[in-house]
Image (cartoon, rainbow, N blue to C red; front, side, top):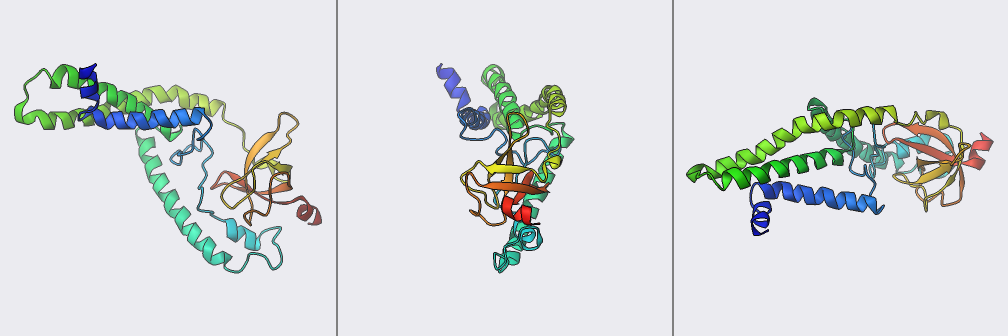
Amino acid sequence: MALFLEIVTSFPTVVYSVLLLVVVVHWLLSALGILEVDSVDGLMPDGFGGHDVGGHGLGGHAHGAHGIGHDPGGHAHGGHAEGAGDHADAGRHHEAGSDAGGVLMKFGLHGVPIMVVFTIIAVVGWSFCFFVDEYVLRTVPLGIFELPARIATMVGGLLLAIPVGRIVLTPVRRAMRRYAPVSQRPMLGRYGTVRSPELTLTSGTVEVDDGGAGLILQVRADVSGRFVRGDRVVLIEYLEDRNAYRAISAEEFERL
């Protein structure tokens, strides 16, 4: 046990020990419902996992200023300036996500939640470093080459994780494509009931009756707090960049 603890807390295994601890905590919080499984998933080129820009509010004010259901005397003043800043932030976020997503695609690690990729890297890298440290680095006299050997072991763990991850994720990716939900664009014009405490520019959910158990959809409002739990709204626009809908009140929709 003492040897085990010494190895997992020493370089290079400790690097993957920290990563492994992070992914374990993430999956535990996800299992408890505190985090969503894809909550840090912004690097998926294939579009799985409900990518949401989050706080950037891309298009929120712009749509609100010109779109259907604009309140007279409402939030137009200052909206364009704030929307432009949010748009720039969202553009930088999207560019960074696209670059990282391109790297994942290059190595065949795309199309799944990013935490799944981190989990594979952590498990494979940790296992590789642990056994190399135990059976090679601690048994072979390396002298001045010990540090380079440990660095090479750390890099080797990452390099090994890439082909292993590609092999593991190929069937997972196929299954996700097979069972991926159909496009939600036909939901436009549907009535729904606000399910979250409120709808804002960056968060909120609405329950839509689909004739079955009902659908819980991500919905955004032009003005934060305008709609609260229990309000009736209508989905009028699909915000593809955020995988969410824009909604107006049922009364506004019926007056159009």
